[in-house]
Image (cartoon, rainbow, N blue to C red; front, side, top):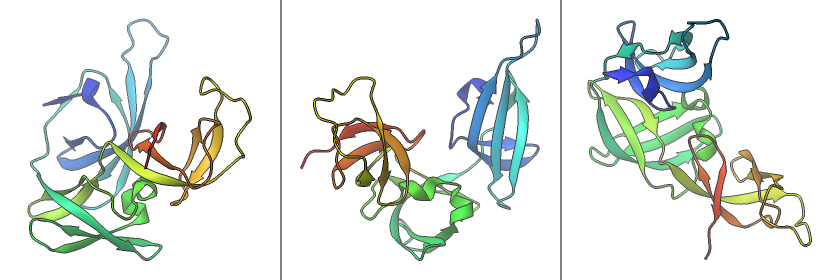
Length: 190
């Protein structure tokens, strides 16, 4: 059973009899006395691809989705479709940018740790690793004498992902990014 306290991006659960994955969520706490915390979720049906926007009260419990996980490899994309291979069966599968729901911004050549999630032998979703290494494609120039604390500047990666980075970073540098919320983790040396 999955409780609302375990909600995070990528969690799979059975909602109204259908397998869904949490694409995004936010938590709101009403000010009225005795009111439950509400999880505003964006869910994607793993069988139909339909997006549901649902408000769920805290404390609700949901069944786990019966699914298999296989290691997967990223092959290439043509701008609108991303192609992958199941490392166990060597079968190829694809997702459109809409089906990936923003995750395509984290997919780069050489990415490791991808997992294909299968329901009844059919690939239904893709799970990203917790962090990915990417190259900064563009950012503002380095600020002289800048320290790493409190000051951040906007940057864009080779996939178009926009994020805030420390002021000492320059275009062309490799950085590690958290795939759960898209924030800068560290500079990658070498």
